[in-house]
Length: 166
Image (tube, rainbow, N blue to C red; front, top):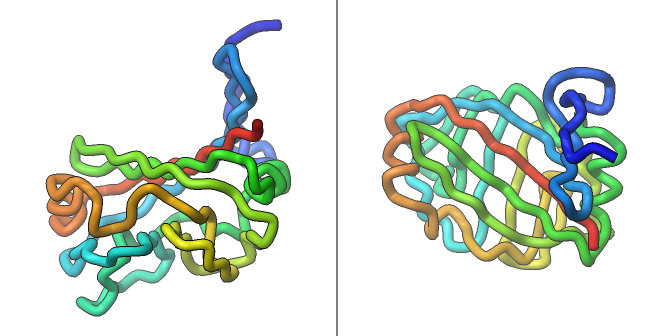
């Protein structure tokens, strides 16, 4: 068996999700492209969010990027199923303007990935249709301020969600 990653797929043969093998358990990934916005403040203490909305008001203190090109409802069934394992490790990596931050949390059987609007990462165990991971080690307020500044300057953003089952 090769350690090379197969060509990325979005579950329907497209380029936005992949399965990689790096000598350990499989890791599934989903990649989302979005845009920073002048109203990004990233001061929320328990969540962070990326939305497909094309606008952001100053009240949206957990939102890191807008105009996401994909929504949770479009993720592969395999990725969603893996995230529903309570023992799964789920990661969210946000990159913009040459800066990157990785947030680590876990899956939950209650995750639905039904939102057609946004992704929410939570430090708590609360779940709704937008939640993509719970019990995270960071929220918007914990992110590197240089990354936040790049997002507030309107930098292009990439959100990579990954999941590894035990």
